[in-house]
Image (cartoon, rainbow, N blue to C red; front, side, top):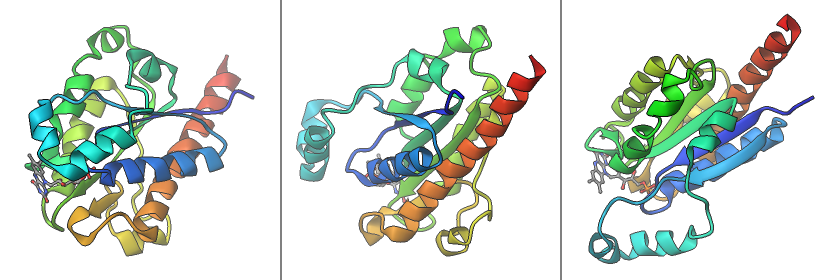
Length: 204
Ligand SMILES: Cc1cc2nc3c(=O)[nH]c(=O)nc-3n(C[C@H](O)[C@H](O)[C@H](O)COP(=O)(O)O)c2cc1C
């Protein structure tokens, strides 16, 4: 049986969201999926990045990760998006990639896939939900099947964000709870997509 295809598309300046993306990849793989981990191209000038050591370090550390392409979306049964909060919204670099998807959207190829998202912010009330809900606006336009983590696993009562895994970067890098939440979120998306895939196969 063809495994569930998961594409994880993320932007991360200083590695927080990247750590969540890696955990999500682990969760999806453990659930039996084939995974593509992708970053989106940086938009900001090198001078801005070079001025922040953690930022330039992260650019170097993730140089081996491929940039997202439209085929990564077309291939996927599940697409997980990760972004830091930027003034309560998704990062412009991720939005810029999403705005290249018009041709797939027009061909109906973004509909019927499972979508879910995760984020980080510097402070606890710094806009995690608004960022995740802003991404979901686009999933509606795509005709996506939005699969949030809700409170479907005990870890959700520890990490506490039913909209999507979220980490407060001001508290340090994602720890075991945030990484477990990301693994759970990805595994749940795979489980729903596997059921959809099997149902669609049976209908043929
Ligand atoms: C332009 C800009 C806007 C930001 N806006 C917010 C914000 O609204 N709320 C917040 O808590 N943190 C904000 N932050 C902090 C980032 O969300 C935080 O550094 C990020 O989640 C860390 O993730 P990363 O390591 O993957 O880049 C902002 C950072 C930048 C550079």
